[in-house]
Amino acid sequence: MAPVLRIDAVTKRFGAVVAVDDVSIDIGANECVALLGASGCGKTTLLRIMAGLEQPDSGRVFIGDDDVTAAPPYARPVNMMFQSYALFPHMTVHENVAFGLKQDGIKGAELTVRADEALKAVELGDLGARKPHQLSGGQRQRVALARCIAKRPRVLLLDEPMAALDKHLRERTQLELLALRKRLGISFVVVTHDQGEAMAMADRVAVMENGRILQLAPPRDLYERPANIQVARFFGDINVWNGVARSDGAVEIAHLGITVAVDGKHVPGESVAVALRPERIAVAPVGGPGLRGRIEDLVYLGSGTTYFVRTPLGGVVRVLAPNTGTPFAHGESVTLTWPAAALMVLAP
Ligand SMILES: Nc1ncnc2c1ncn2[C@@H]1O[C@H](COP(=O)(O)OP(=O)(O)OP(=O)(O)O)[C@@H](O)[C@H]1O
Ligand SMILES: [Mg+2]
View 1 (cartoon, helix red, strand yellow):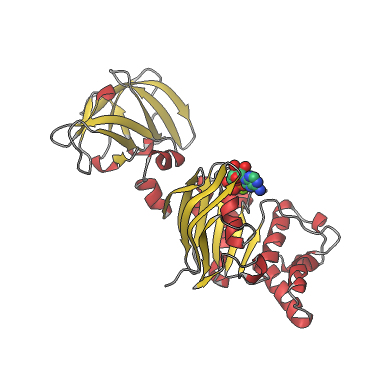
View 2 (cartoon, protein in one colour):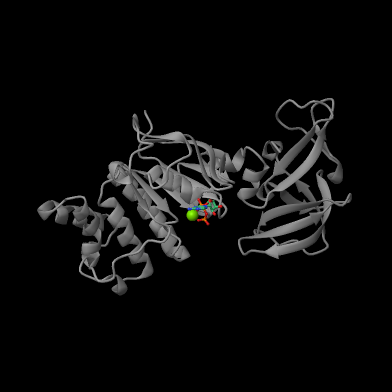
């Protein structure tokens, strides 16, 4: 199926800053793609290019088969909810939602129906007569969302739509947005710098850094098969070990005094970065086979405990263990084991 929105090799500079650097991305029909990355990495700029609010220096933007690179925002079936949105304080909720439609020349019964429908979609059908100051922060956010939905875009661009919400409301709104997407059959591009939110909402996540997409993949692939160290580090505090390939292809990790078998062909002497998620490591009392160490530090987290285990050669391994039995104590000697398949080879 042809993508609904396609960004093809787009670059955007502001003076010396390359805000978006040779980015290509497809948004499928009914798909939710999250743009994830640190502040200033180019998320809003990329969204603005999709919306037509910013012209790329090079590259092209397609909607369906149409090249819309030069098309103004109003000529695109795309709508953007801004990072800092504003409602009109003197208008009711219903009038706020109807305002944009009126500007598009929609009037009479259709205007009312479309505004009603959008408010119902965000579960604000009963609050149409209120003014914005009579709403909670989360409800105001949903009015802004209804205003975007009312225009029935094919693609909805959301810039940090949940930034003003507390954790609980955030989770609920995430689920509502997903249900809404299914019901209305629109595609979403959601900007966030919260990796949990990206994972929870998106079919695919684009991890961005310095205007570039480091990896674009479903959440599980990003977590389990990160393309490089930066992406791996983005999702949790991962152990990254630098090793050297031996002639049999295994990788020797000198600072831990271990050799591990990993996937891939490695030239003898080649340096290889191996990563291991803390939750994939099992910690047991000393005795059985595994990597020996001493618990140097621990952080109690409720459902689990993070242990920092110092190995005899001086390396420290981070372990996240569920708090099922008696937790290990500071200074205790332990043995660490992990399934071979949990080791990931990363590109530098
Ligand atoms: N109109 C502009 N003029 C000059 N520089 C700009 C302009 N808009 C963005 N930039 C720069 O481009 C880079 C990317 O900005 P952008 O707003 O896209 O980042 P972002 O990923 O959305 O960040 P945040 O998470 O803080 O919102 C930044 O270095 C920013 O300072
Ligand atoms: Mg931004």
